[in-house]
Image (cartoon, rainbow, N blue to C red; front, side, top):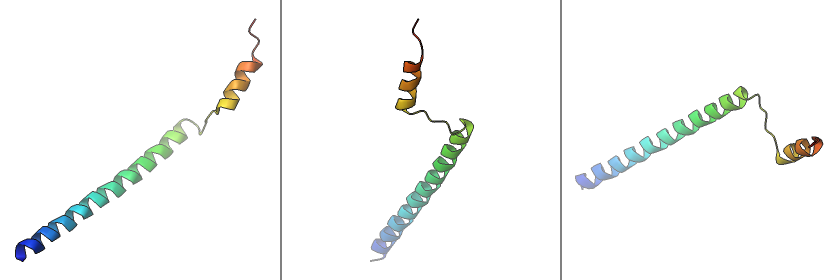
Length: 60
């Protein structure tokens, strides 16, 4: 019975550690994403903008 309680406790502790690491990794990824967005100036070109630029140029 004691071994079962220890096993159950270790499983719960493992789940807690994995969960906390997952939350920490997601927060760091979000912060990194915000920094990258800020670094590029928030510029994102859509395909329609790119097509318009190509059509607007004179090929001659």
